[in-house]
Image 1 (spheres, each protein chain N blue to C red):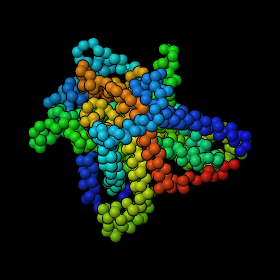
Image 2 (cartoon, rainbow over the protein chains, first blue to last red):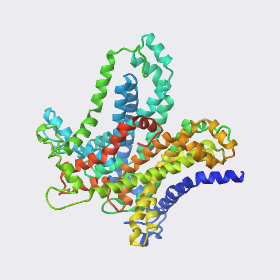
Image 3 (cartoon, rainbow over the protein chains, first blue to last red):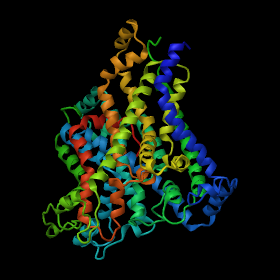
Image 4 (cartoon, chains in turn purple, orange):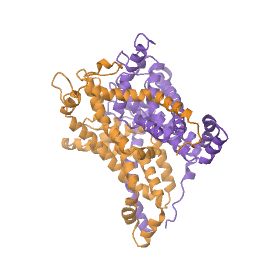
Length: 312
Length: 289
C-alpha cells in the first residue's frame, strides 16, 4: 500500500474504528467478563475481581427450569417475537400493496402516518398507549367498548395474563415495526416494470390477482430480508416495552422479553444483578451474531458489494 | 406514478377507507394526547364534555409549574436544552464519522473493505442491550473523580454511546449517497493533483449535501427520542425522563404531562411536514424496529 493511501485511509476510517472499538468491542469483552463475576448493584470495587466462572450461566439454566417468572419471560419472548414478526411483515406488505393501488396523494399521507410510531419519541409514544389501554374506565379502549355496550366493566388489558399483556406489547411494538416493512416493500414495488402491471390490467386482472401473481413473487428477496432483519431486531429491542412495564400498564412477567429482562436486571428497580444480566446478554448476543451471519449468507449481501470503479 | 390509469377506480375508495380504519387507533391516540394538552382534564374516554379549551397547561409547562397545587417546579427550558444537546451531539458525531467512513468505503479500494462492510452490517444487527451492561461498566470505570466535570462527562458519554448505535447504518446510508455521484467529478480533481482528502472536502461534500442532511436528520431524531441511554448515563433530566418520572408521580397534573408530550413531539411533526420525501427515502435504508 502506498504511503499516501495509508494516510488517506487512516484519516477517513480512524474515527469509525475508534468508535467501534470503544463502544462495541470493549463493552462486548466487558459484558462477557461481567457475566463471569458476581457483580451486583454496580458495586465495582467489591465485585469486579470476584470471578465465579460459569456460575451465572448455571443460574440462568436453573431459572429456566424452575423459576416461573423467568419461564414467563422466555415464553413471552417466543410469543412476542413470533407474532410481532408476522404482523410486521404482513402488515408492512399489506400497507405497501394498499398504498400501491391508490392515488399518490393519499398513499404518501398514509405512509407518513405509519412512520409516526417509529419517529415519535418513545416516551410520548408510550404515553399515548398508556391512556389507550389503561385498565380503568379512563382508558380509551375500555370507554369505547363500554359505550358500545360490548363490555360492562373496564378490563385491565395489560394485567390479564398471559394474552392481555401479550396483546398490548405486540400491538404497541407491532406498529413500530410495520413501517420498516412498508418502506422496503414500497421501494421494491416501485422498481417493478410498469409494463407488467399494465399488461395484466389490459388482460382484465384484478388488483388481488396482480398482487398475488406478479407483485409478491417479484419482491420475494425483500420479504426474506424484512423477515430476517425484523427477527433480529425484535429479539433484541426493548425501549418500546420498557415504559409499558415501568408504568405497570402491562404485567411485569408477561410483558417482559429477554432483552428487557437483561436491562431491568442490570439497571431496574430493586435488586440489580449485573452478573446474571450479562450472562443473559451474552446468550442474546450469540443468537444475534449467528442470526446476523445467517442473514448475510441467505440474502447474499456480499454480491451487492461491488468494487469501487476506477480507484487508483 | 403508482398503479396504471387503467385500474378500476371503484376499489380505490374502499382501500382508502380500510386504511383509515386500520389507522384509527394511531390517529385517535395521538390526537387525544394533543387535545388533552389543550384541555383542563385528560380526554381519554371520548367524552366531549371533559374538554374545556385552555392554554393553562402550556403556560404552566413553560413556567415549570408541574403541579396545580404545591410549589413543585422544574425548569422545562433547561430540560429541553439537555435533550437538544444530546440530539445535536449525536447528529454531529454520526454525521461526521459517517461522512468520512462512507466516502472511503464507496471510493477507495483497500484490503479488508468488504469485510469492514459486512462487519458494519452485523454490528447494526447486534443487540444494543447486550452492549449496555459493558458500556455502563466502561462509564463507571472512567467516571471522573472531579465533581465539576461529571456533568460534562455524562453529556459527552451519552452522546458518544448513543451515536455509536447509529453509526453502522449511517455509514451504509452515506456510502449509498456517495455511490450515486459520478466518478468523473473525482477524476477531474485527482488529475489536477489534489489529494483524496482535498477531493473529499472540496468536491464531494458539496455534492452530497442532501445525503448529509438525511443522515443528520435521522441521527438527530434518534438522539432526541432516546430514553434508555439518557436515563442510564445522563445525570441531568431530559424530556423523556421527565415524562417517565412524572407519569407515576402523585402530584403531577396529567394534562400538563400531555402538553409536555406534545411539546416533545414537535420536532418530529416539524420534520414530518418539511422533510417528507427525505424521511421516506432515508428510512428505506433500514432502521431497526
